[in-house]
Image (cartoon, rainbow, N blue to C red; front, side, top):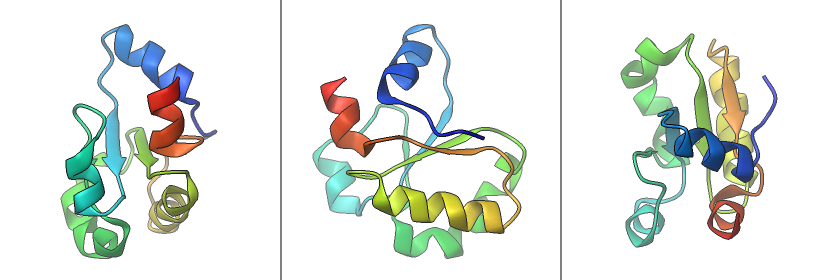
Length: 99
């Protein structure tokens, strides 16, 4: 699955869609500001949270961090563990805020 642009995500949300969004930034970053409805799972804790995500294995998951690096790692990790539809938010939260 291809990654997603901030504009595409904003448009989908404006149309009433509620995709699963996982914020892999640190907890304190998420507490400062976040995308409404996103789920905070810091990258370092992702391996321990796989069981909680099991029901999403075949669904679209959008991962994001501040600029896109950590979420690219999260996407690769999830794909390696059998998640089939993982998309990285290009430019991360910074780009989303500016879109």
